[in-house]
Structures are given as C-alpha cells and as structure tokens.
Amino acid sequence: MERKPAEKNGAENGVKNVNNKERSFVKGIFNHLGLKIISLVLAVLLWVIVMNLSDYSMTKTIYNIPVEQQNGEKIEEMGKVYDVISDDTVDIVVKGPRSMVDQLVVSDFYAYVDLADLSVTNSAQIHVQAKESRIGSAIEIHPVDDVMNLTIEDKVTRELPIKAVANGDVADGYAIGSVKVTPNIIRIEGPESIIDRVTEVRASVDARGVSANLKKTVTPVCMNAYSESMADRPIELSVSEVTVDLTVYPTKTVPLKLKSEGSPEDGYSVVELNYNPQEVTVAGPEEVLKKVNAIYIEDISVEGLNQNKEMNVAITDYLPDEVILADTNSEVAVNIIVEEQTVREIEVSASDIAMMGMNVSYDYTLKTSTAFKIRLKGLEADIEKVNKDSLQLSVDATDLPAGEHVMKLSYASPKNTTVTVLGKVTLEIKEKETTETTDPDGGGNPDATGEQPG
Image (cartoon, one colour):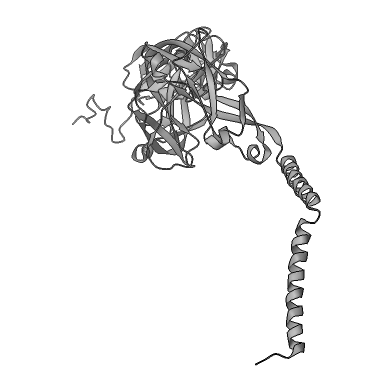
C-alpha cells in the first residue's frame, strides 16, 4: 500500500529528530572534556584527602602483655634455677592507622624471651609481635621496657611438716576438736634465696558454720615469716594436693573448782583463794562430755608462803581425757591472800570445863594448874569470834577408877585457828561414903552382899 505524501514526510522528520538527539548527546559528552577530567581528578583527590583525614595515624599504649619464657630448661640443666625479678609482663606503644590501632588489645600480641640467650647481667631481650600478619605489617611496635631481668642461683630442697589450718568459726555450740592433714610431710624445691624464706607449709580448709566432721582435699601453700602466701614464687612441691580431716565436737560450759595444798609459813594463814574465770567452755565427744560437770584444779601450792601470791595456771593441764578447751581463756588467774596470824589467850577455870562420863558411885573434883589458859593462834578475824562457850571445853571420865588423873581437855576446833592448852587439868575421883540405915523391924545393916542376916 503506497503511503500518502504527508505520512512519508512525518516519518522522515522523526528519523531526523532521533539522529539529531544522538549527535547532541555525543557532542555533549565531549563538550568541555578538559574541565570534566579535571573535576574527576579533583573529586578523587578530595576523597583521598578525606579518607586520610578520617583514618589518621595514631599511637596507643597497651599494658601488661604476658611474656613467655622460652628455653628455661637450659638453665635448669646446669643445676641452677632462675627467678624473674622484673615484671613478667611488658607494655608496648603501637603506631598505625586509627581504624586499626584503636581496636588493638592485649590478646592481639605475643611476647617472649629466649632464656638461652642471656646477657652477662642475667637479662634477656623481650620480643613482641602481632599475632596476625596483616596487623604486623600495618603498625609499628615499640616495647616500653624490652628487657627481663633474672636471678640465677643454686636449686635447693627442704622437707617441712604441713600445718593444717581451719579458717573461720564453726557453728554455735561446736568447737574444732582436731585438724589433721595427710600426708603431713612435704618436700619443696626451688631457688635457695626463696626456699630459705619459707617458714611453713599450710593446708587450709574453710570451717565457717561447720557442725559435723569434714574431709576435704586442698592445695598446700608455702608461707613466709609474715604469714604471706608464696604461691606465686617458683617453688616446686612434692605433692600438689593433700587431705585435711576436720573433727568437730559439741561444747559445754562448766565451773572451775580450785583448792590449795600445803601449809604457809608458820605464823601465817591463807585468807582467800581468788581466781578468774570461774567457768570455762570445753568440748569433746558427746558421750564423754556428759560426764564432765566441773574442771578441778586442786594443787594450788601455798607451801611456805608468808605474803600474797599471784599465778597463772594452764587449764589444759587439768582437762579429762578426750576433752579439749574451747574457751578464749587458756589460763586461770589465781590470787592467794596470806595474812600473819595473831595470838590470843583465854583464862579458863575448872568451872568452865564440863564433866562427861561420870559414875554416880564416885565424887569428882576437877582442878586446874595455876594460870591455866587456852592459847589461840590464827587470823584476827577468826580469833575474835572465839570464847569459852564456843570452845565447849570438857573432860571425859568414863571408866576411870578412883584416884587422881591428868585429863585430856577436849574442845571444839575454831575455824582456821590453832588451839594450845597451857597448863594441865587434874581430876580427883573418890568413892562416895556409905551411911548406916536402921531396919524398921529391928534388923541390922545389910552385909557386903546386900543380903539381910537371917
């Protein structure tokens, strides 16, 4: 079908318009080409500058990187031991791009010394490197102190007992009976200067709130004279673990009973025996503790004393078998009060002496020697209370025949008082005289047998 002239012209015009646009686009690209290239270069430079400004170089200090000690066995092969006397960590300063340096931490680095390469002053160079090569190639590493100092000395060995220790207070009403450790001997080995500072080896258990026997495995620790742990020192132990047995007993509070023995110097008396505490807390197996009602201390010597005396007595010396002291007081303080005695004499007459055991068939006459007295010797406070009545003086004539007898005077013994009788008491005994009687029926006196005559 043949196009009309108008349609044909429209198509040709459309093709021309497209071609004109393409030529304009191409022409626009290359128009001012130099300026456009310069703009692109400037944009790239600006991006580089901005990136450099935002990721600038910075430094950062990283502290306490552990230093690994290599080839230490080389020293030990010579029969020597070493000890690090400087820090066993190292601080470093790192420098590099902020984006990387700002993220770095201790675990990104590895530090070591080669102990086979010691200087004459027993020091070794510390080497530090990044664990990842990408980090190591991008930063600079500068150790703050790149030397580790050591002491090298002879290795020595000692054997020490292990001391078992219970820390903390057990439950109320209970006390620690015993703390035992197995094994109880340990061998320690290390540098001579360090081993010499070890004063004891402890095996400790936590006893807080415990109310029953306890058995626990613990690690022994070397201690110095200041009770400080030496666990961080290079000491080798023959055993790494020991067993501690803790025995716990119930407690009981009982009185203390004190008694003196012996006699003070002649002319002196013990006035008081004071002591403190008056009671103590003890512990032991329950069946044993039930039988303990007091702690008796009966050998407080007052022998030969002529003045007051103070002393401390160890309570533990008087505890029954299987009983232990669970008290803060391990001693009892004793105060013995001694006073000089005084003398007093009481004059006594025969009328002050009671007659005992008299026979109705006899007549009794009691005589005392001239200046007959009772001498009292003791403490003034005790003597003042004594009189003739309280002495209850008496003699006993039971079964005595007629005649004259030197009598033993009996008396009540006053408290803390010595009684001496001065003089003697004589008792005269006579048969009573008989009188004649008349029989109402005209009979005579009865004969010796008491029978009437026939």
